Amino acid sequence: MSRILFRAEQVTKAFPGTLALDHVDFDAYAGSVNILVGENGAGKSTLMKILAGAERPTEGRLLLEGELVSFTTPSEAMARGIGIIYQELDLCPNMSVAENLFLGHEHTRNGCIDRKRQAQIARRIVTHLKHDIDPDCLVGDLRVSEQQIVAIAKALRHDIRVLIMDEPTSSLSSQEVRTLFELMGDLKARGVAIIYISHRLEELLEIGDHITVLRDGRVAAHAEMSEIDMPWILHQMLGETRVDVPHHGNAARVEPLLTVDDLSYPRTESGVSVDHVSFEVKSGEIVGLFGLMGAGRTELLECLMGLHPEACGKVTLAGETLDDRLGLDQRIARGMMLIPEDRQAAGIVQTMTLGENITLANLDRYQRMGWLPRNFGAEDVAAAIEKLAIKAGSPTQMITTLSGGNQQKAIIGKALLTRPRLLLMDEPGRGIDVKAKAEVFTIMNRVAAEGMGILFVSSEMKEIVALADRTLVMSRGRITAELTRGTYDETDLMLNAVGLRVAI
Image (tube, rainbow, N blue to C red; front, side, top):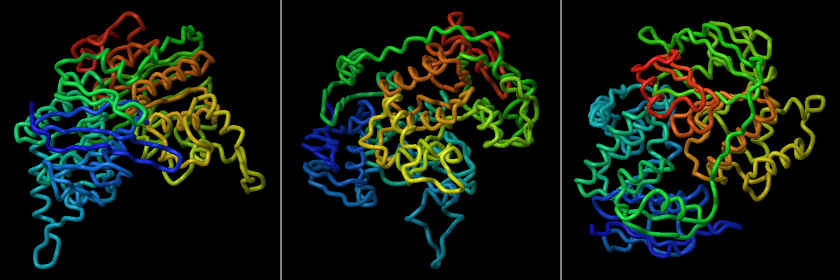
């Protein structure tokens, strides 16, 4: 067995009213991928923040190669070779790629920052990751998948001994995932201990060497990956909890709710994000949108919401043609709402409470002569929390203290409070655990059965196959296939996504 490089012994973390970790033991082996899994709220992120110096344990101790260590800041942990890549990326969008990589550790020359030198090193690191991202490009101008690569490059700029990766593949394409796994192989060969968190359970069996399962803040199981299988992981994570998601079984109504004719959005001179797309979504229908990274899925949803005024084409919702000049507010008022891909940046306001986030898109409904009364929307918030089974102490709890799955349900609650006819959902299952996904998918089935139309993007083929009544496959901005439930499998999705099969 590999030697233990980093160890947490009897680590406990108590927050006011919550015991996040209860005497947890965790070992990270050198030259190995050490898997950590558990439902959202199981304590994974808290444990990783303690290991990386972002949180202090209430009890317990940390040992690095047998030496007792204590970190008060992430910088102290990084100085000892412990780096972390957070699920919600800790990057500065208003700074360049190179500036982000060297933030707090700038190269200087004659008392000034040596930007040329930083750009050279940044380009070398990014090239090693098999990407050609411009070091001078603003991080805020990059796609989420490219930002993920920058976060990985930022960690690798240091002399890493322990690398913590929290959902690193959640925004990556299949090819980018393969590149990441190759990089992880190189790090293992150098003796780096990789701590890996992911809700894509099929990945774990492929890359993992050791696994620890957390449940309700305690260690439920340890094992060697060679000795376990997928049912074992699910049983240890969920106990006896069932996570089956039955299909809503509601035949879509005949009349089209949304009709899109010849919609185009030219993003650059060299490529097209949305290229003459036409399709329909019926009331009560769940339509999946599948494609590889860069296929134009997110851009399509953004065009439908009026976020790209330069887009052209005809969009009709419930018989009303939406003028190109109608912006976001007007489209929400007409019955269209978007659940964005980037939950932290575009879905919630992190400085607000759960209740404030749920009511945020409906303030006009609650205002009286320009003023918001005390406890406005309290009944609507309480109803949303109960109906969506949001786990929170109270509506006044800060949204950032909730697990990812409960944050996602809060965003859905905000959207449903606008009383939409059509719900656009971009990666609704991204970065949440198995049980939370099942709950979100159950909500989708329920509102579709009530007559709402849903158009949702997912990079997970299993989600598409299980949920969608029909699936539209996109490749290079075009719809390359329209597939009906029960007539296709994951192979068909991938073949159409790469342009090897055309089904329409």
